[in-house]
Length: 616
Image (cartoon, rainbow, N blue to C red; front, side, top):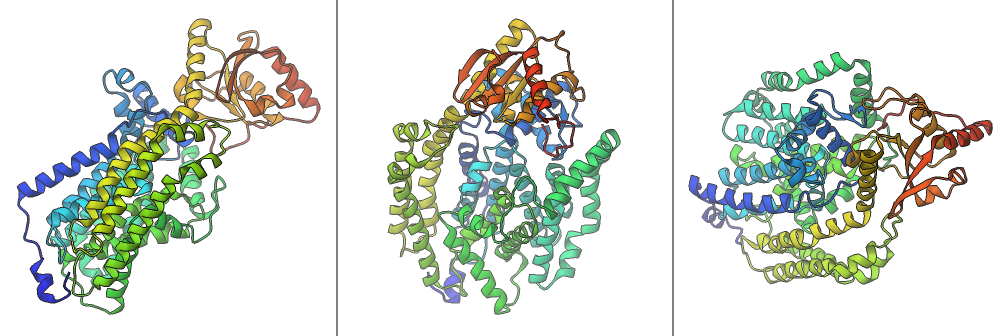
């Protein structure tokens, strides 16, 4: 890897033919389908947020109401509808209940599609615009795409039924279209704004803010903000974005009124940014560790890519030609996510997901030869990445030490089953192979050495991580599904009864029973709330409060710890099922009302009518 200008020029790639690009994209498509879609519907939904998304998408397909997302009989205003629309299309496919019995393939479809689209767009961008010094653009394209999709954060969220994966995909597509417009001198400037409209329909105005910060930083770094403005045409562009995204917001506000405004804009956007919600209080430096973990084991290469950018800017090097500025754009993109969400009061690891495509670009481009880069620094960061992979491998080899320390009351058998499964051993072998290949290629200036380490990591995803997820689902979520099956059978046999879940509140119970569930905690007030809601709660679609004379019994799902509370003792219930930590009781409502009366005499009152922002 020579640092002379002649050597750099020698490895500069020639433009690829359409056939070469197509073949490389087919390889990426095959890899993306394997990583994102293998066993996508093989396990159940993990409580608590994914079942809320999936239930809303399924409700749209079944009711034909594609305007307002609803869960458990209540409007769900926390996210715009695009993620629910994509889920709903999955649930509307013919015979969906037969080939997707758990309903999770359709629920996870938006996340998997968003990840796959991002992977392909990253690869296509590097194939069409090879960067300086890149003598093997096809290898770089595949390596960058895999650096993105093999991020631990992406591996998890690409299989989670929430909106973050689809936001990351639509935002990445929009930003890469913006950069490609800049690289081509303004061609197809409108396309990025169309996709940005879809991003706004996925998670709201945060997409516009992230896009704006990225482009502002990039324009300043290029010292040509005015030229970028002329190329991208933000005023007509934002008009296109608004025409695509705003009609739904207007219709929803017209139909639902103030509750939609207060919940979506007030709570889920303004309040989440300005104050801590759901106890997600984190220090200001929270996303520093998230950045490091999300790039494992190639974190040193990501830091190297960022350091190269800082060095170029510090030395005030002349701006590169527009098609050669992708690394700078990726750095501005990552910095925009870091700045925005560091300033937000509420912080979650998933907020970092929109930065992972930029991180993938920085990791792959950091290893390209350049007159301005040190081979020694690249070799040192490569060695550090190999050592990090070795640490991960040793962690899997030593699983017998730390796995028994896992202590989750909802998964008491997980440590023993995980060690007996052999999945940890598979993970250790995959990581070890990656370490051996990485060490062998340390001092060899091989353009494909990043791919050599990524290959075993792809195998790790397929033969170790996905099976571990399936095992965790069987231990943790299967009991909820088993209880739900009993409820469905009892409903078919004896007719509908009021249904409550107390203590551990799992939205997946509503998803699998397809019945309105009254959720309450483990306090004495929870019992009083359940009784009062069975009688008087009438504002949920599909649920009407009933008297004891109409429905003399009720079904209660209760966990072991809650069932030991004194106020749930002595109800002379009938236990219909016990699975894992959950019990299904049939309770005489007269006895429940009598117990609630006793508690009210002690000063316990019903408070379920008080507003709860995260109610379901």
